[in-house]
Length: 116
Length: 114
Image (cartoon, rainbow over all chains, first blue to last red; front, side):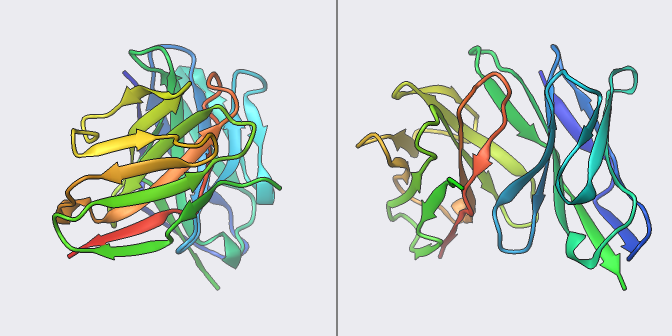
C-alpha cells in the first residue's frame, strides 16, 4: 500500500526567502511522485514530477524537488519565494493498486503563506 | 493548451436529490478519475475508469455513486441520493498513460448539499 505524509500543514516564509515543503512517502514498488499546486478557488496544477529518471526534478515557477530513495522523501524547494507562490501544495505518490492500475494518492497538503 | 473542463462549477442541492457532475477529459486521454476534497481536508480518490469500465474504486465510492462515459467525450459522476456529507469539491482528472500517474485536473465542481 502507498501513502504520503506532508509533515507541515502550514509553512510561512517572507518574500525572497527560501521555501521548503516536506514530503515523505511509502510505496511497495518504485513510485512516481508529483507535486501539485492549488491556488484559491482554482483546480490542481502540476508543478513537477519524478518518474525514475533524474533524481533532481525541476518544475515550473522555479520550484524543484529531489527524490531521495534512502530517506523516502521528495521535498519541494524554491530558492526565493514570491507572493504569487502563496497556495496549497500537494505531494502525490502514484503506485500500482491491487487491480493493476496506478492510483495517485494525495498528501494532506501544505499551505504556503508568503509575507511581504 | 488542451484542458479538462467540468460543469457545473457550483451546484446546490437538497439532501436526497440526485446530482450529475460532468467532465470533458482531454481528447486523447484514455484514463479518467474522480477525486473529492471536503472543505479543509485532503484530496481523496473516488474512482478510476478505463476502457468503459471502472478499474479501481475507493471505499468512499459506494452504491450511491456511479460513473459513465455516455458519448465518448463526457465522463460523468452521479450521486443518486445526496447526503450532507457529500458536500465537497469534486475534481475530474484524465491521463494519457496509466503508468506514470500524471493527471490533468479540471477546476472542480463544488457541490453543496442542504
